Image (cartoon, rainbow, N blue to C red; front, side):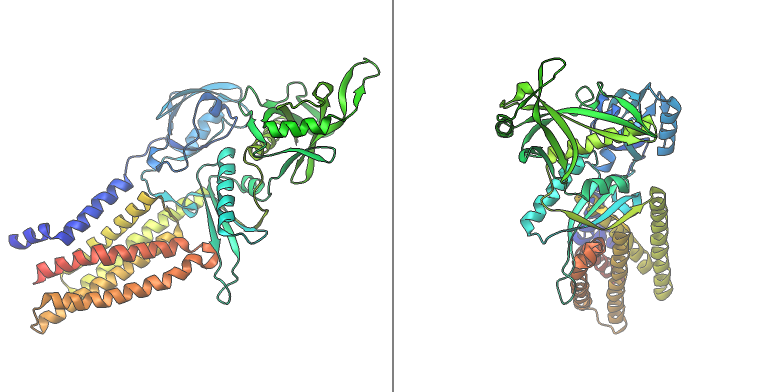
Amino acid sequence: MNHKIKKLLTNWRILLLASFIIISLIAIHPTLSEGVAIRSVLTNSTASNAGIQQPKPNIQPVAREKIISVNNKPVKDVEEYYRQISAAGLNRTITVKTTKGSYRILINEKDIGLRVYDAPATNVRKGLDLQGGTRVLLQPEIKLNQFDISVLIDNMKERLNVYGLSDLTIREANDLPPPLGTGNQYIVVEIAGATEEEVKDLLAKQGKFEARIGNATVFKGGNDVVYVARSANEAGIDPSAGCGQQGSQWLCRFRFSITLSQEAAQRQADATKDLEVLYDSVSGRSDYLSEKLELYLDDAKVDELSIGADLKGQAATQIAISGSGSGANQQEATFNSLQNMKRLQTILITGSLPVKLNIVKTDAISPVLGEGFVRNSILMSVLAILSVAAVIAIRYRKLMIAIPILITMLSEVIILLGVAAFIGWNMDLAAIAGILVAIGTGVDDQIVITDETLKGETANVYNWREKVKRAFVIIMLAYATVVVAMIPLIFAGAGLLKGFAITTIIGVTIGVFVTRPAYSSFVEIMLK
């Protein structure tokens, strides 16, 4: 027996499997979670002004900045965090301690501008189905080539990151070409923790911004704009206009400045050089030019600004932009005004999307529902593994066979999760289904190996290499069949089954080249 154990510990296939398991556990990085993790920081919020940085898009989950306490009171979960923020009251300064420092933050409006979630315990990223958020299926108005699709996705990522949404996935998805499918082209956007309204507002419209004087366009959002003021000192509610009540509605005006490129400033100078100067009959002064600077967003006029007489024919690079927001009360009007300002700032920075996108479908998933999915998924996975182990034990009545098969199944789950954590793949319900399929095919392959081995044993055939070789011929044929069947699913259904297909392919590949060979070596050594 000691000789067999020594052979197991020195077998290169078993050592390879052990190495994969260790590397996977390092990638998964299981840890005790405390506090709440910061998902995103809203631009121009008091938290942003206090110095809390927007998380990097590709940061590992366990490395995210976590809030440990508010006013020296420990924060254990999301509910407790929001309860402590609410208890502090408006216009109060609180102390927020995180894993990266301590911040003094003023509570104004509705919150301090942080979007948080329960601190993750591993580096395995949960997909939208498991953590809640919004999924939007978009279709370009016209067919785009691969280069234009890449530009579109990059522009969308930049726009959403500027807006303060960092935990997101944007990918291209296509239906199968005719006659197997429609050949439609789609963009799938998944944003954790974002509301449906925020996503629609940013993505449903092309976001084309133009500033016109008469019939001439003097500058557009994007390359014409060098700098957009976004800090609290440079942007916010216009102090000269403030908020006021108009009928039953409140109206608040915002104001911020931008810096134009020299080319855009010159176009403005050319457009104003021939305009008339209007004189105020009361003061006798020349205040403004005869035309106004009109601001258009998606071809709809959103505001107009008077042009000072001193700017006639001058290539001025500094421009003040204003607008407004309304609401049932002053607090709501202020919030809507600042949201409109933030959206306009985002479009001025990123420019318009290359093409208009039509919303085909939106799915809003509750975080509470996602937690239920996680619990049920783990429970079903454990039950499936235990059920298979029980059937194997009854079939062979040998613990020497049943226990290794159970260990192999668990090893495949660990390695799959490790691969997902390493490459940053989001695990959703479709991916979990792929894991179960991979485990199922793995058990089937191990039964083939075991049956071939035992069949040879009863027939007094002791050529172990021939028996394992026969088993792996069957396994490789089954592997090829599964991979060929999964490839069309990557593109079918607008790519929504992509997680299932890719997880299944990765799972069966790991099984065929790592876990099955290790199991066959175990069977050969222990039963020979």
